[in-house]
Every structure is written in C-alpha cells, then in structure tokens.
Image (cartoon, rainbow, N blue to C red; front, side, top):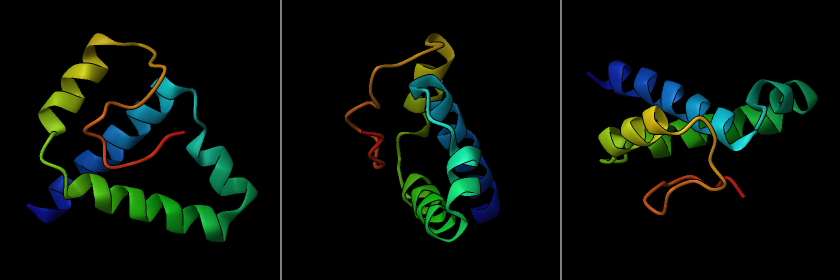
Length: 77
C-alpha cells in the first residue's frame, strides 16, 4: 500500500507540475543533487496528504492552473 501511495503521489506531482508549467525533469537535469532531494521531499509530503481524490479531480478538470490548491502540501511558487 505504501508503494502504491508513493506511485500515485509521483503521478499527482507530475500532473500538477505540468498544469503549472513546471519542468521537474529539466530542473533535476540542471541540478541533480539538490532537485532530486527536493523532488523526493515533495513526493513524501504528497504521500502524507489526504486530499489525493480532490487533487485527481482538480487535475482531471483543468489542463492548466495558475497556482496549486490551498490544500496542497507542496509549494509551487
């Protein structure tokens, strides 16, 4: 169950990054050590969140977003 939650969190983070115009792979490529740690921490924060359903629905309904929702545990600013 833990690995499924982490896998789902990875997908939600990538989906949110796409909608916000963020390039996670590009950031990791530029600064692998710092950005890989930041990505891991973002995945763990997301995995601890109880709003995955709301996040999935938000992403399903929006191709782009100006900001992450208030309930998001990750800062995209």
